[in-house]
Length: 380
Image 1 (cartoon, rainbow, N blue to C red):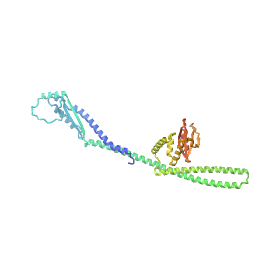
Image 2 (spheres, rainbow, N blue to C red; image 1 turned 90 degrees about the vertical axis):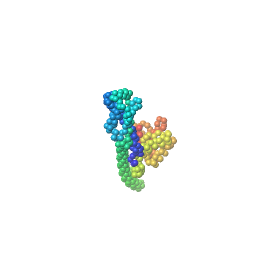
Image 3 (cartoon, one colour; image 1 turned 45 degrees about the vertical axis):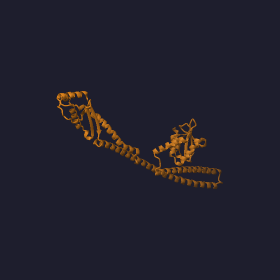
Image 4 (tube, helix red, strand yellow; image 1 turned 180 degrees about the vertical axis):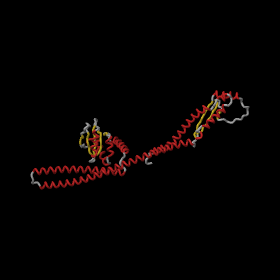
């Protein structure tokens, strides 16, 4: 089922019959001990009648046990009691069997002597308890366990459905947020495009004005040149912002597409993917250590950026001198030297060297996550 794991369903199917079997067996053992103790207390009854010869031991035992079974409340519910009472010599006292009375009935003194002899030697009581499988008691026990199993299944199903509903709501909210962010970035790109066109027009105007003003004084010429240089720097910044915004917008579109297709990884999927990446990196790159932050961020990259990042990692593993370091990052709290590498234009990778000169990659990300990555490294 959609919201129930297979192992839970199997457990709830096997659970009732197994627990029912164990309960019935345990109840039979318990009732055997209880019945044995109670019968041993009542089966002889009033011994004065026995020693006076008014009643034989056999008759007393049969009457007392029969009365006990008739008054027992569990017998009608399907409890079967097989009781055997014997003398030390093996003669059966209970249950009684009809005997032919061909001899003269014994006197009271003979009965009293026989009773004393039997009681003096002692009696053996054997009790076997059996619960009928079609009895009300057994069916009630089994029904209780089935009901308990259904309650567990119902609870787990409702909990799974609620969890799935919350995940869908979270996914919808994140998708809506990304769509709104894409709209904002699109508007910003349109504004940057307009600024770019305006500055280009202004640059051309000033350039033409400069060419027309070559006969002016040197001071005016220098002022115009400085203004043109400033405009060129602004245009370059606008170009950089435009390119960065365009890349961010592309990443957002890819994330939105993944959300719409349901391909964006959940928390459990990210953990599983991070474990797979860690295992693969340890196997492939023996000369490099990876911080867990680097593995998690690597798993969040797009497929294209993962390929570029792994090309750089491969070069670091073979020979670090093959990789061009963009800069050495000076941290406020962390005294260790940290180096920055770029890949795929927008990608950023940070690593340091240990005392044994082994490279440790601390974080992998993009230009957009640069500030968060550096803040994290500063805490190490």
